[in-house]
Length: 338
Image (cartoon, rainbow, N blue to C red; front, side, top):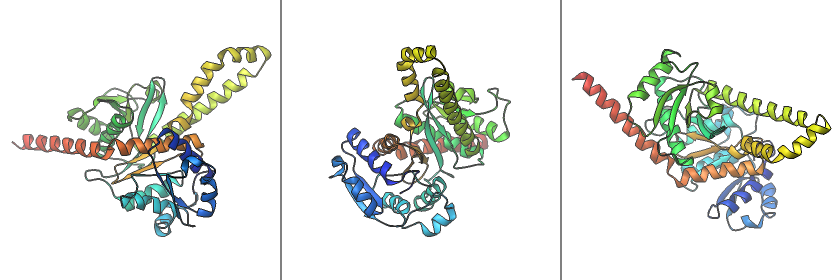
């Protein structure tokens, strides 16, 4: 029931996802009087949907604390509960991000070895796509948190991008080892010494995000959210300037006709709807956050991410890598003691 438009986008997005993923089935939580008429518009959903009625929902303005107190039987709360109870492999929502994170963490709890969940998503780059986390779940982080984010981000990259050994870097103010605060430096040392299924390359700077220098970019939630919003704003600005420039004169309009295929390809690559679906990493269950302003195609992309995560056992990969890291840390302590 959340997002900028509400159930209309969700139901249409489900129909698109069903075409792409014929085996997927849906539990839909919300106001049946609004949802049922929408479902009937899409025959493809007839045999793969179960509507669970509730007239309670979490509003966009609701604080996380308020959602926790009164939202357990809301559409958002019931969808997360379905994951907890094993009735659904993952939950997908376009609703209030803060409330979704708070309720997911409270109801599902963090995985063993994970102190805090992180918000991870795919970003378009000049080389394809990169994974970035944290995108806003944790404003302040310690070195251990950043190491855990790196492990989760690498598992995400192996699951969604199919990379056997993804390259991983910490976002910093420079690439030199002396740059950055003590938290960044400590995380860097821990990752350099670890024996993990990733290619840890050290630091990357802001321009490396767009260049796609690495497969996984790790940072705290404050920096990550600012970087993400800056990138999105820059993409919109460039798109607006191009549109204005290409309609400025008769000659520019003629030029646009010749450049249209290339420009449409660029537009599709940068379109947030094609990269929609941020994952709350590190929980005992999968929860996917769709952008609130996503189109139906964008919501379908978020469902696709959820299906990838569920079918490729993301949690199992993270658990295995955490155990490997913790064993390495334990061996190091034992060696130093000897």
